[in-house]
Length: 334
Ligand SMILES: Nc1ncnc2c1ncn2[C@@H]1O[C@H](COP(=O)(O)OP(=O)(O)OP(=O)(O)O)[C@@H](O)[C@H]1O
Ligand SMILES: [Mg+2]
Image (tube, rainbow, N blue to C red; front, side):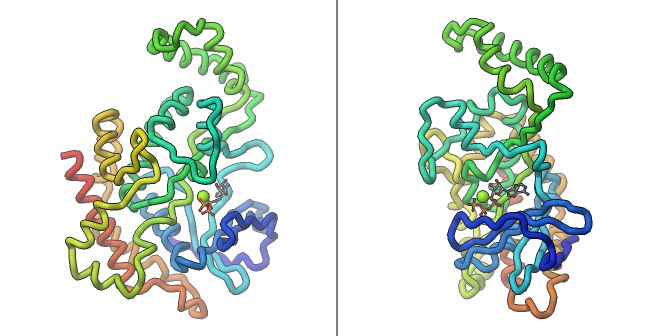
């Protein structure tokens, strides 16, 4: 299930180093010219690339729309590799932060802006049905305990779609008519034409889709040191407390909230959407399969990278974290 790629001889397109310690690059497979994204761990958390890979495989197992990450070796380094989500000629990623900026004129982008679910809700209003996609991400993040869903870690893929311009226009017009009808009064007397023009211009030339989930590596207990794992394994209460206290990066109103608190709020605001995703995940979950997946994740690791393997206690920890979070999700919707 997990693949291993030796990308030493692939063509590096562009090294990116935004955090100072985490190297990443876009790299091309010379055989089929496909573009990939390679990412090493940050020094502080050497096993982080595993969290990305495991989160991705867990996501796939539970049928989330998620980027597939596998193991890659580049010279003497190891990291995770995924295919590019976009065709660089015709598509671009529009990060959440940009979508929010557009929805809130005057919004000031700081280094780490605090974003609430309500801001995202408003920003996604003009994208049909995407709130469901975002709720799916929130459920996934609660399951893996992701602490880093900042607004560059979710996006919309925009494709230049000249051929379908007329079709997109009609589709959008129909959707905007519905929105206007529903919220017309709240739009403070914005004339219909003005409302339509404001939203049509940008969207009718492009097609767009919510991107698959990516960058989920700050999760699965990656910050729990090897030495303290046994304390968690021998004390279920400690583990439960850890899960209960895990915080989401997405605020509720202007407060930082815990993952399952956020899901609880969503259950009230979006009961159908939240419950349908949670129920699908619960139906799909099989603890034996999950255990198998986690315990065999590093099977293809070459012997000379042995020090990068995952210890048995860490695998056990990751499995227990998932298993308990699934239980918590069950309780939440029961
Ligand atoms: N598969 C992909 N296809 C296209 N672009 C990608 C892909 N993966 C990542 N990117 C781009 O590279 C950026 C950085 O990637 P990613 O978020 O995985 O790295 P990171 O260093 O972990 O980020 P962070 O600063 O959030 O920790 C993304 O925000 C996105 O713009
Ligand atoms: Mg990122």
